[in-house]
Image 1 (cartoon, rainbow, N blue to C red):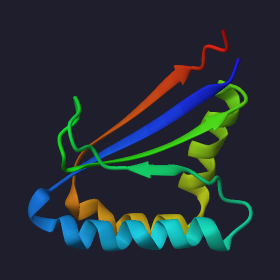
Image 2: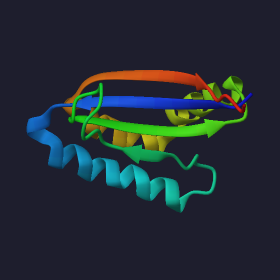
Image 3: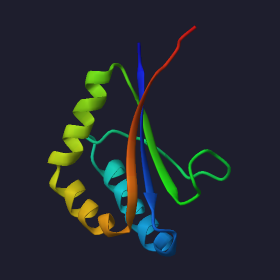
Image 4: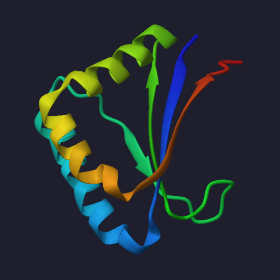
Length: 103
């Protein structure tokens, strides 16, 4: 059973431009490095989450693989350097896991 992991980062809307510029750098990092998971980024227009939320999600073969990606992110120096710059704009972060139903 595959798993979708969704990381939802709610940011200060008065700093949306700064937050999104840093998020572009995360996307560039993903594209430049083959060891990075390639996630999909979304921003709500009309949803349960507010519009000042960035959602990164990816599908994994199992939950263990999803957890390994979280460990990878927290142990990667390039990721940590960008995260340090982005943290002042965060309001909250949620991580959700969904089992994908292959009916």
